[in-house]
Amino acid sequence: MEESSYTGLPTSHLLGSVPAAITEDNNSSKHAPAPAPGPGANMQNFPPRNGGDGGRGYQTIGSPTEAFEQQPANNWRGFFNVSSYSQYFNIDTDDVITRLISSLNPVAGDFFSKIDANPDLYGLVWISTTLVFILASLGNLGTYLMQKHADKSSSWSFDVSYVNMAACSIYGYTIVVPVAYYFFLQYMGSNASLVRFWCMWGYSLTIFNISSFLLIIPVEILRWLIILLSGGASASFVALNLRSYIESVDLQVAVVAAFFLQIALAVFIKVWFFA
Image (cartoon, rainbow, N blue to C red; front, side, top):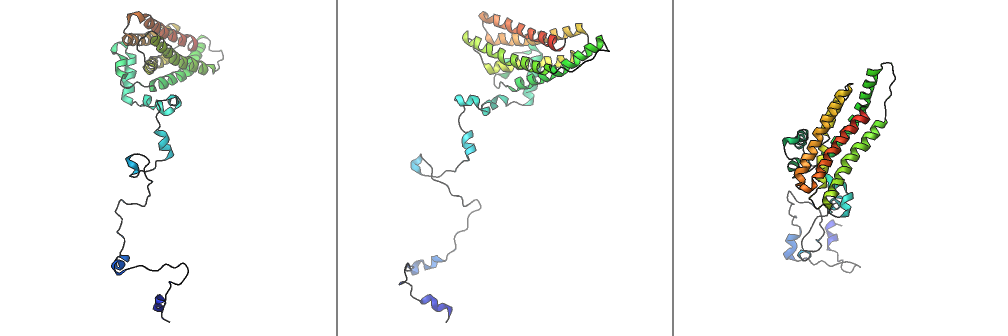
């Protein structure tokens, strides 16, 4: 029996069969090929948009990570979110160099006017951490040179406690002092910005990174001269910029206190690390 004869058998009496309802009008379009997809088409399905426009239109589904990152950080949770502090590290090399040079020249201009558009915490972290390692290493080296200069036959050992003391003193000073000034000025009704204070006090330590290399010279008089000049320059940088920022005669005592705090830090560096 030929194969074509099977196509003519009636199948409407079979259970579950569906009779054909194809007319001659649409028979020609039955075997028409589907249009080819465009170059940018794909087979992705999009769920309907929820809310807005009466439920019309479609939207793509973002990944859970993207949805988490788009959450606002202006609430109390943003204080514990690392990404909320990224704006204070958005600084390039030219800005850092400019601010480093300004900290070495106190009378060059108003430091707060230079950082007003973009105060950073990069200088605070980087300069403070560099100073911690410099004081710990060069402090031991300076002590060794002084000891060998006095008595070449004496034994010497590396003092690991210099690292702990340098970290506690430098980090504690650059964090606590600006915070104290911030709350004090807020209490006195003066304008204050904690990030700008941290930025200024962080860059004020730049000169100590440089002078520490000179403090290894085993001459006590020269050491005191170097540290007092460095402390005076750093103290002048802090006091002059703080005075221009406060702009109040009643709060000049805060400027004087900031000056002597920097001098005290310089003396502490000399006595503890380069004795």
